[in-house]
Image (tube, rainbow, N blue to C red; front, side, top):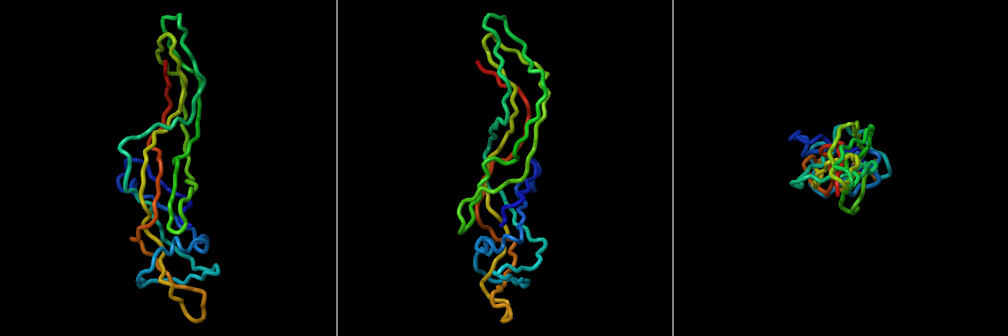
Amino acid sequence: MVLANFRASREGQSSQSRRRRWWSPLAALALVPLALFAMQGSASAQTWCFDQGGGHPDLKGDTTWAEGTTQAPNTWQDWVWRGDTFRCPWNSPGCQYSWGYSKTTGWSWSSGLSVSIPYLGSLTPNYGRNGSTSTTFTFTTNLRPGQFAQPIHVVERRWKQGDFVGAFRSNGDHCDSRHPNAVTYWWDGNYRWGHWENNEHVSDYGTYNIWS
């Protein structure tokens, strides 16, 4: 279906940050025809034949976009790693703390991605994109007596939602008498359908968590 290889661009790229390419694997057309043959409508000049028994032509250049329509004004912190905890002694005048090690943490570009598709309900697809944060924690921080500190890796995320643009559509017409199981369909690049929500990566860094 249209849920594989969700490709996202980085924040700050104005045109690409609103539109995400959502490729449509051909093999899944036979599995979820109701999702891709979205609604009945009038066909354009160019049509293809699709055999519901499993045969289909080699399509090229037909892409469904996941387009963002709403996003949260603020980001939130996803702590993807926490290191050892250090406490400054109560009977000290204060501490200067440095963890003193290097750490690399892997994380997913997406968190909590969910997709709602007509006729199929809610799905949780695989985002398929990952990143990592590497930090050498040799920098120091000052602690008051009794305070705690630990090294952490943080991914700043922003919640977004939107819908999909582009789908294969069909009015159920058969291609010809020689192929009774084959129906015509066409690509409608402006058709909007479905819904998605996601917490996308905005930035990542290493720092210290300090508390009393």
